[in-house]
Length: 182
Length: 182
DNA sequence: TTGACTGTACCGTCTGGACGGTTTATGTGC
DNA sequence: GCACATAAACCGTCCAGACGGTACAGTCAA
Image 1 (tube, rainbow over the protein chains, first blue to last red):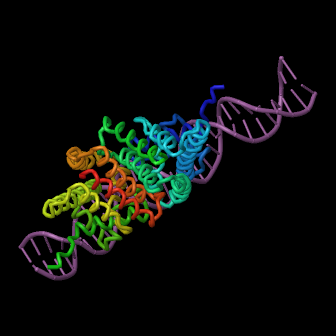
Image 2: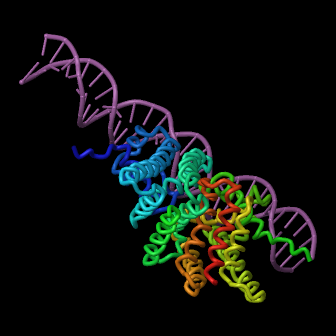
Image 3: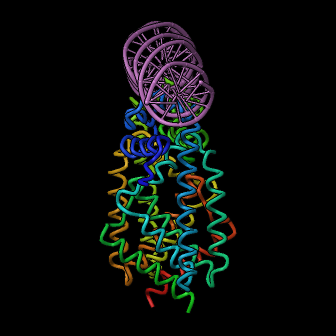
């Protein structure tokens, strides 16, 4: 049961690769098809038009983040540790070097900014829920925003933090959120 | 001496407006010209091709940020207050609702991600310089990253923080950086 | 006279996507 | 075990429109 990825997912992977390599502007159906080693007609079979492809990219990204959050929450509850620090740590982990989730966001905002309104709403609800019950909601927001800053500057190639500094930042943010519970 | 903006600047304004309204993908020379109430030939008179226009957008944004930083630094020195908190506060101020600096970044990364490498380098130097001399460099980085998170999520329409929470976050970040000097 | 445009016409290329055809997987009846 | 049917998955091509860019003649204020 290798659970091999569906063609639909391979297409989304290809789309993200293209965006990362050539910029959102050049995420054409042809380019995606070439990267996925599929014909253009094949891509259009799974996603009837470009907008549908973009929506799928955004949806997959958002649900990926939400899944990680929910998994981290139940893990924390099982272990009896505070939820927030564990969620933050999990999301930091995501921030690996080759992780290119988020290119969906770039492509969507390049094509039609409104495409992200729904995504923004879903994420907003998660983050509000997670932070409002925290002992120190403002500090919790700062923790999440630090994460956003790190990921988004990296995504846009504007990252001003060196790799060797990231661990220290990550450690400090997690420590800060842990201290809220003492 | 009203110092009325040059046509070149009006064109860049128009470009940013178009990106914010229609997405980076639709920042065409025609659209920019229409928004600037100038003919297409007029745009191409000032910027010989689209790449030159994009470079000018990025350059203007970066130098705008750098100017604000340098101004805040000398202000702080004149008043004899710590530099870092004042710089952070100044940059937060920038984050007004209609502030749309940063759309240049979106357009550039959509067209050619490499365009931002230079910009990233310049900003990285500023931020490294500002943080490495701070009593607590890691906390200083977190402060800047919180700012980045706030601005970039707003730029992408992924903002998960409500307006009424921003003031509290801003206040807390500034307080945190001030406490470093005590 | 010159610099800063306007306006129009035009070219080559790229792109979305419609369409018709072909292969492959999955049954289904016998 | 096999012939056949049916739908899903996929290919290759074509076309209209959009876009970047060029060319050039004309306008108009300083």
